[in-house]
Length: 275
Image (cartoon, rainbow, N blue to C red; front, side, top):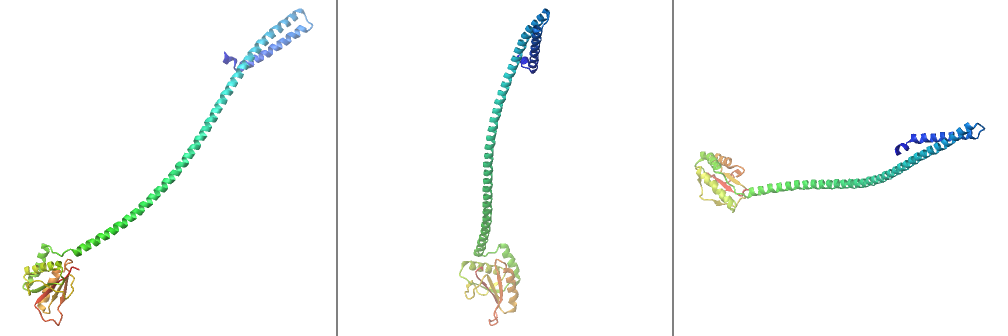
């Protein structure tokens, strides 16, 4: 019912009806006060009474409708005002959230830049460490090579049983050849190697011109020195001996005896230090 009274059509309708009732009252008053018959005056009185009643009734209904509409309008205005305030508050909160998010984003961006800078610094340190490691590896490799070279220099010369048999096989054709063997150092390593060479020559049928291994410090010798006398028959045997012993582990050096030295039927072998 209230919704019907609050409608715009009801308000307009009763407002028009009130106006019509006012016109009826005015017409009744006209009939009542004009010089007319009694019957017309009675009709005029009736119209005035009915018009006043209808005017009051329609006016009340129109007033109630207007009041309800006004109350509803005020309620809608209040609701809209409240909603506008809520929206304004929500807008303010959103702005604050946006501002906070912007600050957080700025902090995050700064943190990312800082992290990128730290990563770049770490990568640079890693690159330096890699270069240092490469240099250290090179130094270690050089040191290892030097150590192996030194160990090789310090290691005693030796010949495997297979190598000894090969050397003996090459010298067998010269069985009976005389030789002497001496050591140009007081170290034990040249002496042991001289004994190994002498043993192989004896096994190949060669003969010692002077028994035993002597010491000869008159000439510094590195490796092995083989001197052949000026007797032509000793030269092939001397060259065969140099070829058989001339390996990197032995280092044989072939020489002819000076012209002022008397002829000799023996080959002189002098064993010196390794290098």
